Structures are given as structure tokens and as C-alpha cells.
Image (cartoon, rainbow, N blue to C red; front, side, top):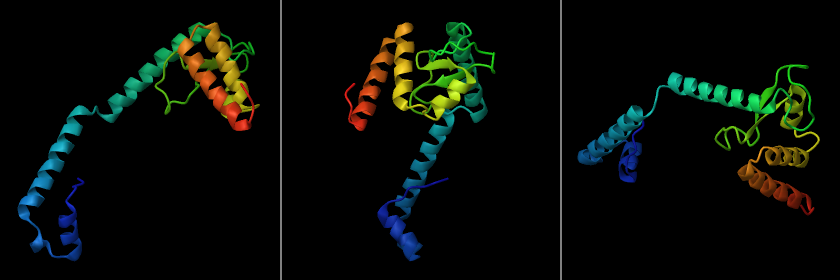
Length: 161
């Protein structure tokens, strides 16, 4: 367990003179750390449960997005999913950057997913495709977010949106 001590207590430990330490200060710091640790442990689900819940959530989103796609790649190419491999769920903004939902996910063919991940032909191109996809499905919040990102990408390149 990690215990946070005051600067004075830390200096005393570093100097090797534990006798100079105020024992009440040490007891207070240890008790505080134990309370914080116990509270966090109680509130947090076990890792296996969190992982199972996340997998269940992703599965539900995948099913909803697949139904919305009607078996076709949603980037606009129209490729039939399953023809060259199963469709792949793509989190447009990335799972770490935005909570996953049916609004920010789309179903892509394997080749399109690979190209999008590599930003080929360009991030600008994929942003435009995602904007068209969101407009087609009336995902207005995502349209606004994607247009703002597109404006940023174009400004960085020195172009106007």
C-alpha cells in the first residue's frame, strides 16, 4: 500500500532518523491512506466484472450498428459486408477519447477499416465520409463534432473548410 507522508516525515525517513518523526503524524498519514484505499476497493468492481460488462456493451452496440448498416460498409463505398470478411465495428473517435455509442461507431468493411486506421488517403477524407454518414442517419451532435475537427485539420494544412 502506498502511503503519502508530509514533507517533514519524508525528510526524516530519508535522513535515516526515524526517531525525529512525530508518531502522531505518521499514524494519521497511515490511517488516511488506509481509509482511502478501503473506500476505492469497495466502490470498484472486480476486473473480470468490468471486462464482462464492457464486452456486453460493445456486443449490444455492434448488433445495433450492424442492423443500421443493413449489411453494407457505412463509409460510403457500399461494399457488402461478409463478401471479403465480416464487417468491423469502428469507434470513429477512438475508444479512449469518447465513450462508445451507436452514434460514434460505424460498421466498416475490413479493407476500409484498415485504411481508416492508417488514415489513407487522409484524415480529411475520412472526416468527410463520417460527416456524410452522420448526416444520413441524423446524428447531429456527431456532425457538429466532425465538422469542428475537419475545420481544425484544414486550418493546420492552411486551407479553408
